[in-house]
Length: 94
Image (cartoon, helix red, strand yellow):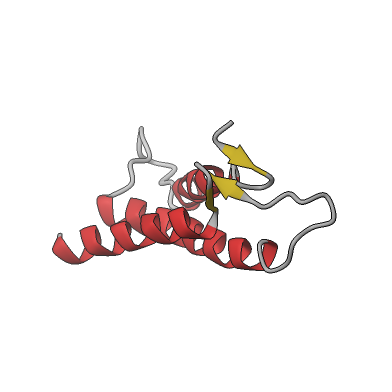
C-alpha cells in the first residue's frame, strides 16, 4: 500500500482545493470554468500547505496502534512540502 493512516490526504487535499477554487471562481455566464495556471498552482499550494501542517500535527507523537501517517513510505508532510515548493518554483519561474 502506498499510504498509511491519513497519508492519502497528500493527494486528496490539493485536488479538493482545486475543485473548491474552480467552483468559487466560476463565471456563471461562461460556458466553462477554466482556471489559469497561477490559480491552479495557488490551489495546489494551499492544499499542500494544509497537509504539511496536518502531517506535523499527526506525526508529532506515536499513536497507540503504532500507525504513522505516510505517503510512499515517507511521512506525509515531506511529500506535501515538496509539492508546495514545486508549485512555488513554477509560479516564480512563470
